[in-house]
Length: 247
Image (cartoon, rainbow, N blue to C red; front, side):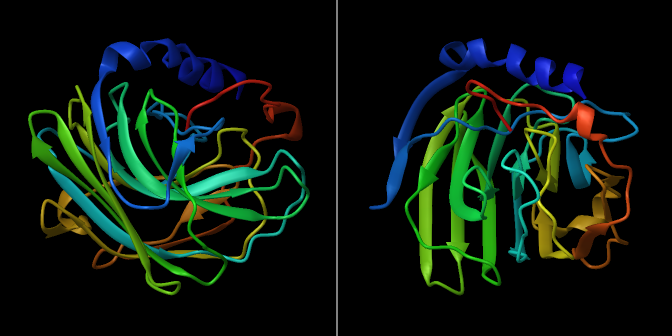
């Protein structure tokens, strides 16, 4: 809904103050892109995020895998990403990594990325496609540092970067998100092997969230599936983004 996008955009101007420094490693690191992923607003009927979110304090790490679904574009506004990260549910920063599917050219295009919200996402120029098994992790290293790792086990590449941000570490999540409020169509997206601070995700009794017509199934031993069937944004609520946004 429009107020949710406006809330996310309101944080964009904080990027310079919040980002302390950045060190990027890996030969395929790319420049920051125009789309971005940001915080969720708790307790809405439909959410910016869909999946599971653990709340608390002092979260140090999250790791998890998913299989990229074969998405079908229904609009050039379709844009979404599965990702894992720390913060954003009850805070105004997010430390995250995932794979974006964009339909701006009328067909699905897949790109790997990380983001230290409110800074813009940074995209890696590695091959990724439907059916690939992706593993992502975010680990706090102390002093405001976060090591972000993304691996495509099918294509055989790994990217790793250390970034710095003044963050609160108050949530840990494995979710899907659409900044435009317009998801492409897919039958199922499977998350697995999710751990937080070295424990299976279930131990934190995370909250399940619906988003854009997709709902999480039961969480069992760090695994769950996102499938169609949840509350869906009406077409009038889809957001036509003219400038930079954040996930």
